[in-house]
Length: 324
Ligand code: XIL
Image 1 (cartoon, rainbow, N blue to C red):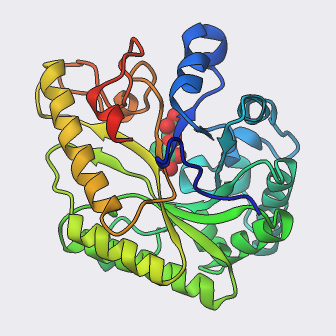
Image 2 (cartoon, rainbow, N blue to C red; image 1 turned 90 degrees about the vertical axis):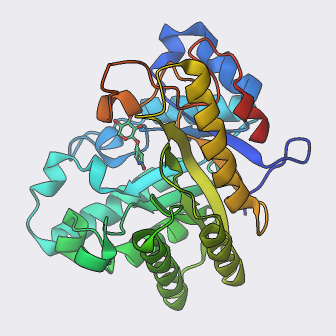
């Protein structure tokens, strides 16, 4: 099967989420990726609504382009994601029969997984299935798939990937697993429960992805991360960082101060992640500040630019690139 960690000079593999759109408009984009990163993560191109926007229409081209780019240039690729509340096409949500919903899910996963069979090191099969606050409205998030198929849609999705591409490492991905506080301790607990349930159901779950969208001003629970990593290790499951970036709504508008704040929170996070052992890989969610999802969902009050990623808008390396 495909291996997980691939070291560069003894370091942990560094991935970057990229988008096919920018290859044509920005000649520096692909080159910057190749200069700095080991693994391609298609940011949106493999998501349900993008690759399967209508029942009888499949849109494989953008994903093909990224997977081909990786292969041609000797880089790894991983898949993201089959089951995610944030990428549901309307045509699916209109289906009201349980049986039909189930067959649509299976068929979708089979078709997409099969197309890239043997070419992706792994799949974030399900993404963000833990409720925002599992103590109140959980443990699972209220989604179309949960309403239609119940919690069993999760093992079903994993079984379908495993059957279609036995070499793909099966990963479960979620956010807000790194912070201090009861809520986040609970979220880590629920994630461990999900992993054990999948294992008890005979699923060879190989990794947990911590997204790592880091908010300046919040406190990383280094001990909590270390304990979480140790517990995963005991279960034979790897830890991956899958979507690292920095969301700074408060430190300053001065780039130097923002970059210092980013450096410091990334360092705390990686200290916690690396404390027990090295993670399988670290993937950043975007490669340059020029293209990032953050201003779309969390604009700064004064409209000043975010600086979430290890390369500036002009592709200069920031200090925190050395930690990656
Ligand atoms: C985001 C992308 O970055 C955006 O371009 C897109 O419009 C919406 O999705 N958690 C995830 C990612 O798991 O898939 C999300 O990506 C960001 C939050």
